[in-house]
Image 1 (cartoon, rainbow, N blue to C red):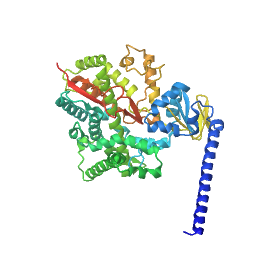
Image 2: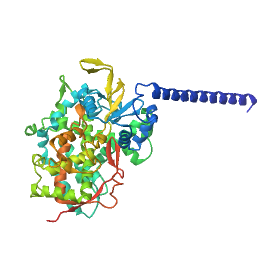
Image 3: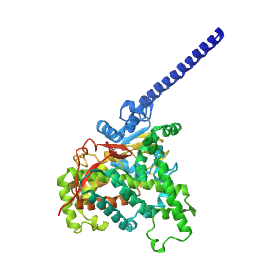
Length: 527
């Protein structure tokens, strides 16, 4: 190498180093200027909260990826009060009046966060940000989730629940099994029967050591959403190429469900085309048929939209109910007083332990319903922040305003606001001893009519306002049917490995135990 080459290399190195220093200096200067603006000049400066959260979303994101956002937001409310700034442009609140204003009165659009929950890379009702577009989409499936319509599917709900009972009887309480997995198989069968008129046999495929691939994909999807929301779009394909089998399964969860639902759509469309649909079943139509028949201005939904919508319902209907059921039975395993009281009520209501009452009868059992409500308060499966965006103008007292008044703080358009069920359900003035599982608080013998009405106002396990979960009626059906039938037939025992530490809640929009499992043994009752 001659001297000229050496000098050329050194000059290039010097120029490159200078460019790097200049770039880093610009980045540092931007960070400093942004921090000064956010802390001193932003319209949100007066709102209380940790200073480091105000200058960057990074701090809150660290808690999101650690699966502890709900808890950290609760801690912020305890420290700073009912309104807290948790990001440069994000405000969280805990207030019933503001909740009604944001979600019910003004019906703010959703934030871009929900796009991390796209199914098959396409919108469904939950990820449709604009309220007006969501209204049109919701009409396509709303009639499916009425109490009258879901009651028609009770035979399938009962059959699958009794299949679950048979599995537990065969195990005889000798083996502690993961309830999260087993209940998810049950819910997959129920949701597929009511949504597609199809039976995937998830329960029949289940063994103590394995689960159905579709069920696993449903469980993986929320975690995939958290990961995708934390990773830049350009880096997502790189992340999904990591050579680890289990990690690839998680990344492919969307694809697995899309293939399953696509097959159901094309099967049903073919049956309709050749006239194989039984005319006697026209009243008892699965949700998929309703979506295929749905029209907006005489225009049918595209197959892509139908597939994405059905995927959204499959995920929401299966994973959430199985989680709440698991926590409910964990409570029965460690609270002998509650177990004895609910069994006493069920023994009287179900003289034949295998004859499941109609939902109308189950809904009249005071303690069962109090038990379910308390479970939804503490273990509602989706207690996370429900992000909305302040619009450009807001009607108030007959005038249009450019600033939204949130408990005395003026928020400009584009500000993200949110509350979370986790905190609303733990308001001590409404729910004394909020961390204690206490079904009695919901009985009219323990609380006045006014107190019960107030508690019900704060209870939002399925969301709130115009975007409340469309499938909540199905969840309410299955919670009552499964708890009543299983508690009537079994005593629940938790092994040492299932304890406060293993069941400590984590959240990725939905909740799950820290151990990712809820192992319980179901011992047949002796009469």
